[in-house]
Image 1 (cartoon, rainbow, N blue to C red):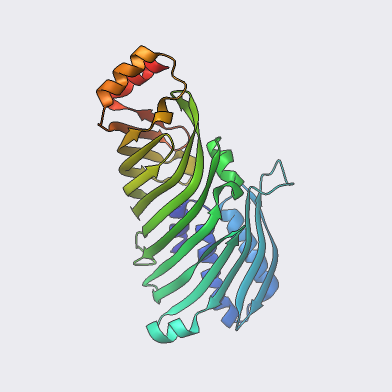
Image 2: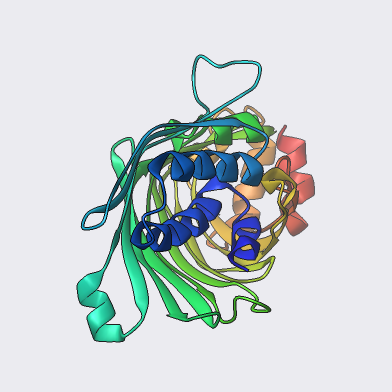
Length: 307
């Protein structure tokens, strides 16, 4: 069922797509507004029980579809400030698209602070499959407080993306996903300092994600930072508890002068610069998403000495 997709996505937003797709049908059957409202709240709470979820308002209109406002997830110990907030969700039947494709489909739009997620949900046939495509523009990672809380580190940046999620069969199909993701003007806190750097600032980070089931491939990864420029690729195994997901990423980086800023061992630094010269430095990131380790291959001992 579609619920498998939601578990695979590992969060409330995937389950929200599933819930809203069903509600399109309920609209046409004139399902009571109050019952729909309760169903949405209960579904989100069941999908992501770590938070207590509320939906401030819901309107149902046949021509305009469903509008939800104020979807908020709170920690049970702190109900003053939500850890997740979706300002609005609009889902409406895509009549023009249905006439063209001959498939049941709906357009959706989610407002998250200054950002927007928008696209189309399409059922390729009764019981045969679902396709969700869309784009992300201007979403601020800092607005999603649960990220920094779960990872226990600073997380900032502006997200842009295009994505497509496919479920070939509702009964037995394995979800497939392809995303081109970009984060601009970001900052990522480091639990294990690298040459006394406790934060990784970057102007741009890009990667293509391809996934099937729990397995996610990272391809053509790029990072531009004042500390270094880098390329990477690898794999990620996704778990329902997102921070427990496992990483295995390999890449290379070209250090910038700021990478060695603050190193006061001039003689050892000269040795490292001589060895690096025009070469790139290989690295590997492995372990869980909560606290991964980074290894600089043959340069690890030298970098350790600089500490």
